[in-house]
Image (tube, rainbow, N blue to C red; front, side, top):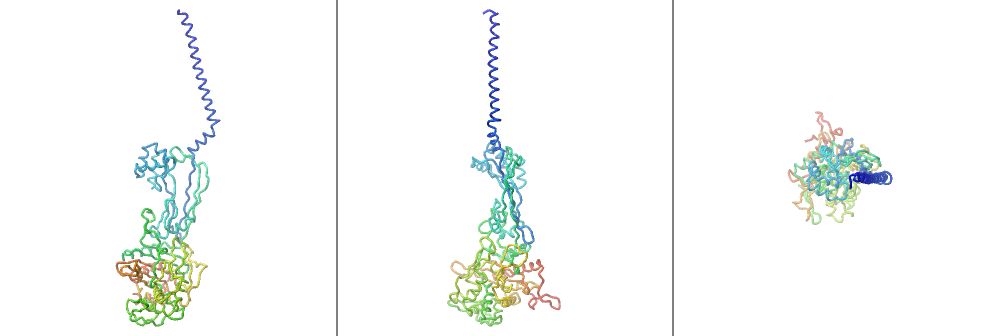
Length: 578
């Protein structure tokens, strides 16, 4: 081909190639235009929904649990906001280095954390660590790890710690009541969580609140009848006694006689409600309401009361107790010594078993049994506490003299410390029984009350019990200078698998009221199995009563009712206090 022909063919090839390129551009532009229409018009709703699903979430809004306060409004249980760490397992697994970093911040095992994430392959949410401290929360926040975020929750705190733990109980990590009043009043205290829609970023952090679906509703507050000052005082003295006497456990209940309010209720051993992992083996049990015991000699005032109401005895009625023993059936009733010829008042002062049995055998078999039932032994106090025990009293009257005799000095029945405290409060209120409560009544007497004892006899028995705390009585260590104190000691032999043995231990008790002239406070102290420094109620429980009652009378500004001597010395019952 000559040169002219070659120059003529080159433009034809260039035009053909240009056409192909142009066509390709046209097709590409058309494809892009179609994709734009598809995305912006045809699939817009679908894509928008998918995008929102990946960025918009419905979040729970925690509700504040109600505050529990004492009778003066002092907080006993409060909920405070805390941060919890959560993660999207799938997103976090895509960044292995972030797993190790998160584990280091929270003090977790990287291997365990990775296994936890792998155990939730299809989930978009998993708790990593809840209720973290502020410094840990800030460390997580500053790290900005992919798929890791913080969520606010509430954690329960107990300012009084172990002092009120048995009464209040505690909540679990979800702020739900597990024991005590937290459980009993859970529906009242628990709030209702709210819900909202939020937009979050790729790290799971909330960028914007979109819509409030439901407002959180805070729980309602609960005002208790207890006085925090008296609670601390009672706990301190009971704990000291249990440690000093190396006892297994102890309980104390303090009641307002006029209103039926529980002013203090403590137990030993204690526990820290903030350390949930340490709670177990029944240590959280409120023994003052849930455990029952044979009351022993604490029943003797009601034996005397039943005899007086039955018309078979008066305070000065003579009782033959020599030689300090009495044979009933195949059993021998014993006193710790031969008291000789004594009256009913001295029977209480010296705590004579033989004297109590003499009274019981002179009565109809239903007299004492019926009085105990009428006073509420063997039935619930309806104080409103989960797991409250009713105690036990036989459903039929004593069938023989042995049962009648043992009932007279407090064996053959069982009661809780709260039931015993209520009984002594009833005695001190001239036989009027008022419902006991753990809720604040502001010191006002309830509308519901029942006359269960003859008033004049109740007053006589109370004055007889005053001799127990005077020189010559078994409870002198319960005395409070300047005040007239009435009470009764109790030393109960515990029953083992084969009956009452020397090695089964004892329970030391004291129950009493103050001041005698105008009774205001009733208290029961129980120390289970003291093994050091004696085991009698007058040795172990009475001093606790005296210390706590002295402090309570002072804190409540209750005026002394002892007599003033010419020298200005305060005495009680006409005799100087030891």
